[in-house]
Length: 138
Length: 338
Image 1: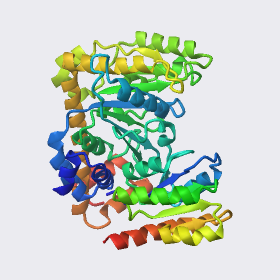
Image 2: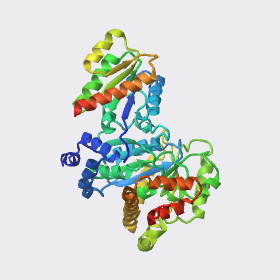
Image 3: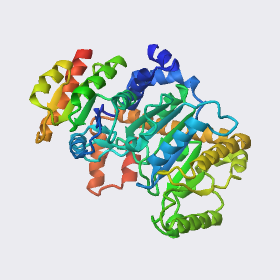
């Protein structure tokens, strides 16, 4: 029997073209034994939600450096919940001003990671968020 | 079963969730697959394989895009096909993790509700696909997808499992990946029903096309089935063998040659249907899948019956050079403990 593996979607919504951070995180998650589905640059919230559905992922990680997070993140959350995946944890990496963090957390974002975050911390947070979602589901 | 009904009605989330269960080899997933199985058989299964970096994902992106807009042929244009894509990438042999990046090249087609893309990791399987790929393709077939692309990992010379799973195998090459000696070696070229030289706008494409054509002319297309199965299906397969694989250029980034490739994939399927080769391939596919499953379940059953550690001690005896592997296994099966 194959053991169950976590499947994580890493996506870059919005228009900025820097995906180094997303790739570093994708690599760290892969090295932690997870299956990472990477969608590439310039994704719309609709594309991200659709990929999350087709791939039936355990969590979604969004990398946003453009400053458009207050527009993009709520839209992704809304689409996920509309399609029956409201329980899938969403985590964000990028440059997020302090005043936006609490608001995003209130919306249901399960982790926000700024520049320089230790990748082990990110891996652990993803794992915990997925576990918490599984418990809530049961 | 609730999920089965939902899937047959076209519920995509239920489909995605069942695919996960089947991939994880959960008993409830297999139960649902059994219920869905009578609904399979409507899909044209198209294997896409070739060396890493030849442009398999980009080509699938183009082929799917074209199929959605124009269908298989001019006549059938009005009907837009439902398309599924199963894209396999390798798992790390050390951590078991994987980076599944085929979607990056398929951005033109996501968002199209008529296309369902699923990425999967090999999870330790060799041969270019994962253990669960066949089951997942069956689920997609039952769910009503009419064309299913099965994209293998970047394959070298031995990853030929896709030949047993697909009706039509497209082998994708690119200029500059080795001379005609590579092409003469057995393996991946032999399973091609259609050979595509992608990136045909690069220098050297003409040479690659020419040398592949030459090699294919030298060899009459070999029988794709393992020897044990040739006997009973000889007649039908002989008819199918009249197909000689075309060698054709494309440029997936611009779309050049894509319409013509769709045409050749369609031609091949029609050829299989008319020659009886399709039935022969289906038989070979089901047979080899069942042989694999039988092997697996016999082994599991056998190991369960063994006294604790007997297999491990047989492994030890081989490591100590006391026995050859074949001898150790025979003694295990015959019940002789060292």
